[in-house]
Image (cartoon, rainbow, N blue to C red; front, side, top):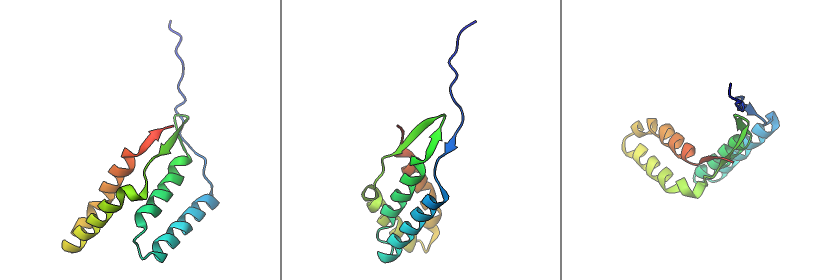
Length: 107
């Protein structure tokens, strides 16, 4: 019989209602006051809060993405959405998920 170390397989959330509310309000004001130009930075800020408060198998996660990294893509996606009369907007959530996932690491 082998002695195996058990890995904690429980995922948890350590954030709070007030933290989520504050993050959401901050993002709303950032996006509103800049007329949407700072949306990539607001999105990166929100995702950083969410990931910072997640634990997967007991391990902390770290989000390394920055708004400036996706700003060019964001502009391209908006232009493609305008040119295609909104059709390209269906691909934006998938592109965002790919970008976010590529910037999450185990801390």
